[in-house]
Image (cartoon, rainbow, N blue to C red; front, side):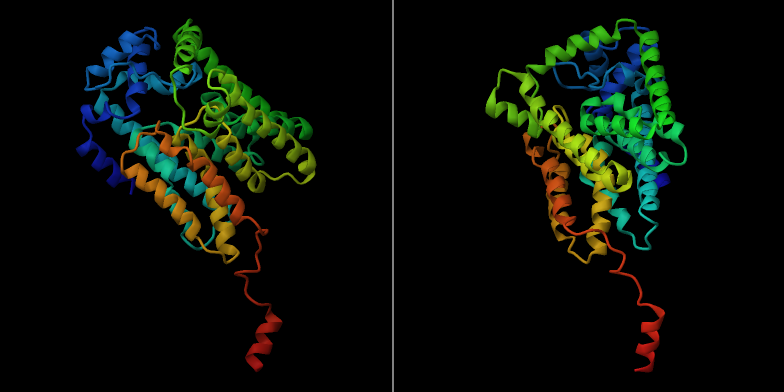
Length: 376
């Protein structure tokens, strides 16, 4: 599957096609970095992007903070076509690895239900658009997989919290409480080391990167329309006060804190992370459809719960089917037509988790019962 995907990309991808994907902003940033130039210089970024066929009149900046510059730097040494192929390949590898690890975490079930993850609409949109959502997913899955066995590596995987911090605010709060309560300082050391190195690296690449990033972010806030429930909340209550969109996030943080404090003795990331991720993404003040790829652990966990309990998967198929139609219809990820997806994943998960996951559904009858049946 991987080899075929690479061959198709190499044959089909052109520089002009790469210019129409989100990949272009990372490639242009990389080009600036290797020439020791400002990665947030609008005129320079726009000129680089237009040189390979970008058609918009305004520059397409990398939305991540300077802690993500290390991702863009290698692209500065590559042509647009080669960079786009390798970038797409990296997304495919991270998606395959994430689904494989999630299959293991869910007990290596003999069915092939985990393959549904390859058709999870936000993950598929990441591949088509060249977005970083699947990279964030991979970091979350690595933390989930290694938090018990290899705490330093699990902490280092939390570098994703610094790439798009607005997606993880309730998750961050619970994580901090969990580390302090259990004195799991090796995870904290791993996370702080990885994030600290990224900050130092960004300053070495461009000493003014953080001030330039703050400037363009402030300029974009007033004009940006974000398809999130928090943005809709702001539009309904106070259009001229951007801080209002943080109210749902604050409520989610309060809920997450209470949930953890009430169940910290039995807290289990495998069981408790899914709803926490879904709430975090739904109440994020700034998120795109491709960012919802990070909730794939919740989706697969919910699918296994639903299947093992003998309930229908049709509701999920309906939600995912409509989202897939939008993806294949080339609906722009900034479109308000995606505002319903994050709440839909949460509602589906909650409705499919009405009853606890049981092992009795597919469990064979005990040996004594088999003897009685045979005698009868």
